[in-house]
Image (spheres, rainbow over the protein chains, first blue to last red):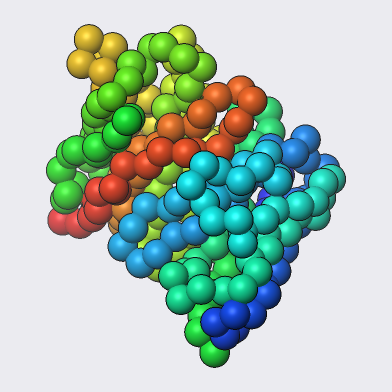
Length: 107
Length: 121
């Protein structure tokens, strides 16, 4: 099974900052990599699919990139609403795996 | 638009079967190329994929749970369901149903609100 490792586990940042979250796969992926935002008590919300495609309605300050085993989620100009937990998710051979999450906190 | 809603008991006794249903509104579970999925989240932890059922009714599941789960659907009611056998306290979690948008997508674009299930005597 493919394992997904996110870093960092916790990230402290300020409004207006640019932040990057990394997701590393234990083996090469075929670009089926997605990113989600989750707030306490709520279901996750899809932000990015196929590594770099922005889901409809998601602000353009969110972007995804990467290939192979390393993928990144970048948020430019952090807004107060962006402080949440972020998860990556991969799909391969009828298996889905999530990363362990990155909690983005206000500095 | 498509909406998903989980339903089922919030408390299950150890060794019993956890049964949840996801009702889909605004679209048919047997049309399109979607995969209807169960995901859980243990308290304070990350997300764990449980299993999925396709638009055609085929199923696939997490190998770590494969002997324990059954995923089925009722197209007449536009619902899909999860049964998790022989539960223990480790199965206490928020259970979500979600939609994978399909073979060229492989991400979950629509989620239910989640339902908390506690396993306790």
